[in-house]
Image (cartoon, rainbow, N blue to C red):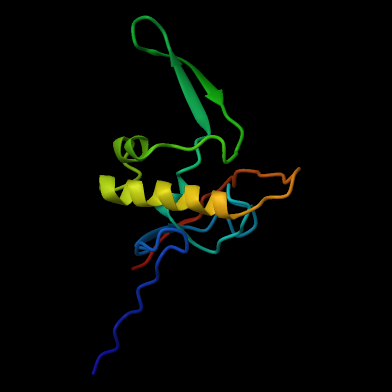
Length: 124
């Protein structure tokens, strides 16, 4: 009898890790914890840039935001940018990240830095 492949799930949202990021092994995530693997959607919940537009609707400026629990994408942002396959998946990831931030009491002065390499891999 053939063995079934064990399907891993995201430690934050519980969704299958078909595509995951390993960038938070050494760098704290916005909830103040390290994760060996995060699903692609949860990894992209922190918002790192904001764009301003001119009167014609063209991008005027990209403003770099600090890697912080204060700046998070909405489910609609994630879905529209293609970081989530469905709106349900995006909502679950955003809610899970927000709940983890709320449950974790970070010490004052905790330095959060965004990983330079997301370390994207597939579960194939």
